[in-house]
Image (tube, rainbow, N blue to C red; front, top):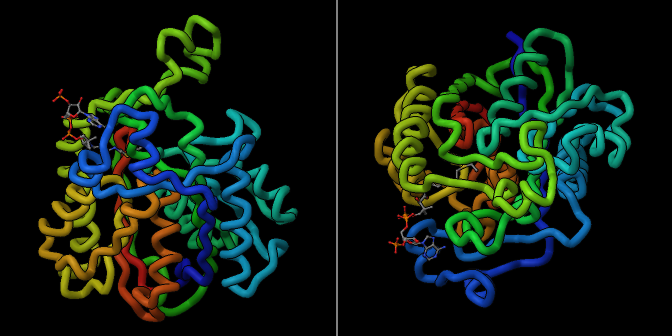
Length: 326
Ligand code: ACO
């Protein structure tokens, strides 16, 4: 059986760091509130003039190098992002040009914070169908550029960053063992940014009336997230006939420590198997899982043969999970 094996990982976090204390200087918030409610202590922030492609390209190159390949070996590039450089052309095409992967097809995938899992699933399907042999899946977000710093409910939650993985068709029992995706478009208003698209284009009126802001119904989202994210984790175990004892590490989307630990508790997963970096990176939406995968590999938390569970939830609503034998 042909499986998609992850043969390389990489990430890129901008040098500039904004701590909660730094935020206190210009956002009506406190370090204590942010840490208690979310677990976030700091976030990275890209430089002026940088977009998602500027973060995604170095992450992609690192993943390709760690796979022992060159950009010319890549057949397909998927860039998962909800903060693309432009509405079009896609950020995947911009990255293709930046890294010189001239043989690759390229497109974006937008499923907000679940983007990486959706992208992984698309790449996996292409590989299993035999259409492509080598795929690059990037999660890249320049979210701080679309925040309104006057909206403290969302301004404190997000950070910039990018992560990437290289998938390769391979025989054997290593690779993606299962994929599960879900969506509930009726709950789209729980987390939404209406302005800047085709319905509410950029006009002075739309800008002034707050349509460029990310609007979040935090408590409702929290309640739904606990249900769908916990459900996705459980589903992954069921699909593979596994229990939490079979898992070596759980790499969750990093949105809120409380939501993550509720999901872990639901399946009886001990804290030491949960990988957390939200304190350092905040919520980097579709970049959070590939960043965490690369960090967990570098720290020895993921090794050859490890059974890794990844799961996410995000705007849409969207959610998903996967189990990977590394
Ligand atoms: N600093 C200080 N006070 C704040 C802040 C802030 N940054 N933000 C809100 N508050 C205040 C509110 O005004 C409110 O004050 P009040 O009681 O005087 O009215 C109080 O804190 C409590 O606000 P709540 O919204 O009820 O706070 P809650 O405990 O629900 O925590 C949070 C908020 C952390 C956002 C939580 O609801 C949550 O994590 N929700 C899920 C969010 C999430 O996961 N988002 C990412 C989705 S993934 C994606 O696709 C992008």
